[in-house]
Image (cartoon, rainbow, N blue to C red; front, side):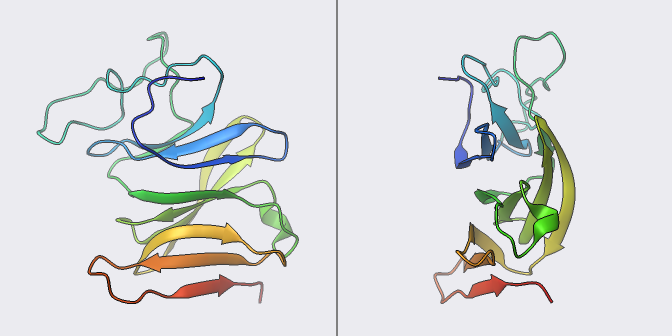
Length: 160
C-alpha cells in the first residue's frame, strides 16, 4: 500500500516486477512514479503543479518525507494510459514505458532502466491518445479519443 496519489490513470509492472504508475496532477504536475510499498507520494501536500484556482502547492523536495516522481510534466500532458513494452518488434524499446497523452495529443516514451526513468521520445499525434497497448506480435496499438464523441481511430504501429 502507498499513499498520496492524486489520480492514477495507468499502472503496469516492468519485467523485474517493479510497479510503475502514471497520474494526472492538478494544473501541471502529471507524474510517473515507481510505486514503493509504504511510500507517501505527497498529494495534496506536495506536487509539481498548482491548484486550479492558482494557489501554490509546494514542489517535492529532498527530505520532505514524500516520494518524488521519477518524471513529471508542467504544463500537463493529461495522461490517458501506461504500457511497459516487452515485445520483439521494437527491441530497442524493451522495458520502456509508453504513455498516451490526451491533452498533450501525443505518444510519449519513457526510458526505464532499473529504478531510473527519463523522458525519451515525444511524438505529436495531433489527436488525443486514450490508450496504448502492446499486441501479441509486438506492435504498439493506439486508441484515439475525441472530445466531441465522434468516431476515433485505432492505429497499429510497426517497424519500417
